Length: 332
Ligand code: SF4
Image (cartoon, rainbow, N blue to C red; front, side):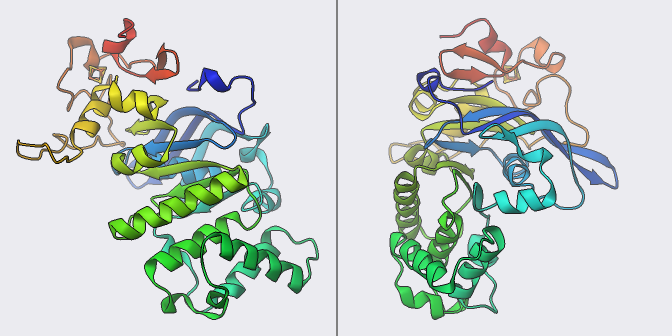
């Protein structure tokens, strides 16, 4: 399982084991997450990166058990401090959300209720997920503390979401995610709708509150540049599987998997003289996935066995995991 030996003295705060999730479709089951396993250490920032349809958002929502009715968790474990979230009752899971594991959802700015003032939405979050008879004064004191920590003025409590800018709404979502001091925060493309300057400011705020709280973060996204600035480790997903995991510096310096290599090459940079090129080909159909390595129809380094044998996800060198036949021989 993909981990980091430098942290082995500590216990992981989150351990995902062989998670398998599918969608029920008219054409049959679509396996969106196919045997994903990883660790998350306390206070660590892990990025899950990949193209649309790689399974990263389904993985994130499955950890929170926030899937649509058509989604089936076929197997696996999601251990938060040793407790399997997939085995909790609905009520136990509701109490765990926000208090133990929270989500900044994709399009978070639009996830706020347009009919309710921000303060009331924040109060509702505390009442719904920590119903222990807190007084309104105690709840408001906590909300004020959290709003200050995300650099928002207290008068946003009396505002409706449409009265706030995109960056302010995003900060409200960050505030909501940390209200109950969770150990893990999942941020699913948290800044995709923001301009670059606001994006950077919001990510800095997220980093600051995360460090202050000591929470671990899973950042889900497709932007390798953003990952490089924010996370400690990266997990690259393709076709519902993790294909590479490692420390961010190592991955950018020496990506092992051909797909990771192409993701990094497709980042624009100022020295670029050639025509900008993305990754050739299309992401695989998960209803009728290609045999062998799912990446083989697009892989520039494909060899004969790639279309037949599924590569194993193995530790290639310390802290570096990959699923590729070219790496199995011990590429260094
Ligand atoms: Fe490419 Fe083969 Fe490696 Fe898959 S296993 S990434 S097709 S070289």
